[in-house]
Length: 89
Image 1 (tube, rainbow, N blue to C red):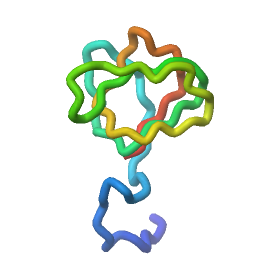
Image 2: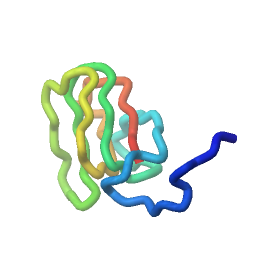
Image 3: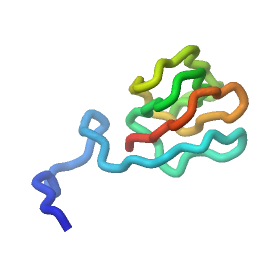
Image 4: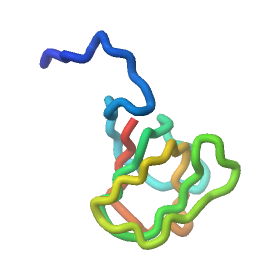
């Protein structure tokens, strides 16, 4: 196992992500972790619900390689055309 020089540091919302995970958009399931941001690998629309939001919001025409700095709890399948989405937590 590699040495983690930051193992004694506390995690915060502005710290780099310690966990990265593939996101499969779903109309019913929330993400396993609330994100610090999401990475969009293939261009398209992203329909998401933020941590404290009650409604879904559409990020339209997101370009491939974009990082959306948002604390996200769900990415909806309906309306999301972007792909290869990665959660950064």
